Amino acid sequence: MSDKTYDVVGLGSAIVDAITHADDAFVQEWGIEKGGMTLIDEPRAHLLYDAMGPASETSGGSAANTVAGVASFGGRSAFIGTVRDDQLGEIFRHDIRACGVDYDVPAGTEGPSTARCLILVTPDAQRSMSTYLGISSLVDPADVDEALVASSKVVYCEGYLWDMPQTIEAIEKAFDRAREAGGKVSFALSDGHCVDRHREDFLRLVDERVDILFANEHEICSLYPGDGFEDAVEDVRNHCEIAVLTRSEQGSVVVTADETLRIPAEPTEVVDTTGAGDLYAAGFLYAYTQGLDLTTCARLGSAAAAEVISHLGARPEIALSEIAGRVLV
Image (cartoon, rainbow, N blue to C red):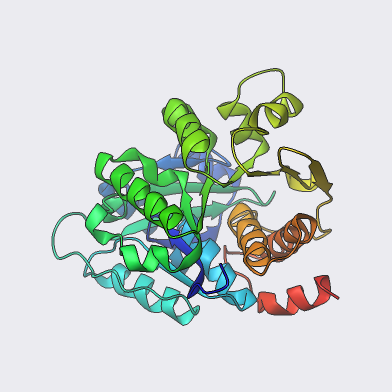
């Protein structure tokens, strides 16, 4: 894979994140599921945005956060996702490019507006997300540049993108072209509700197309219902090359056919858990594409996650290459 132009190409929802602090009373008043992600329509998105306190706005979405993290480590990354030709679409396009990510998908000229995720962070550091998907859920197979995915060591996709038929075709097209070109395919389960909606499809995908699977404890136990996490570890072992399972303060578990690696979490003060899984994947995939061993991949993932949960927002406040320098000594 050393001849590839990119380390990671991400395929996901192009979303502008608006993030602010809120108290529990505000979350309850708006009927928002605390700590979860709820899909909303555009009118509710406008009402909630108007009611929120001052917010910071950045390009977001799970896979977009991951490829931005890869770029922050010094890796080469690109993104595939759709925005409209509106103000939020311009914010997304400018911001992700400023992070060092190549992004050249043309903006849509009709249809729904650019997606937004309204994130409320409560004093216990939980983030409650209300997401209007807009045009981001309409990634078309034509948006997948075959030469781009073929030029990447890893093509990475978020499970959130699985809800629209044409988007499924786009994902499968990207995965198949990547593997034909000798690259690896990586997939994140994204959310327990997402797994519940698409369990059979995800099981088939993991069996047939995925080389590197990312999931947290709740998600992997939703994919393989049984008697708990350790049973899920054994269930996933022979279904993909590498399963990377995160467990918050309990660290992470990397599972292959031959071994189970348990890596402790990086100590930090938790301010906001937004983006923890996305940046863990960034650290892991960056290290993986540099040919490092799986324990080091997990350590870099943990270090990136620790940085992003130590402050508000889903993007690192320092260059992750600085963290890599400390971890890799």
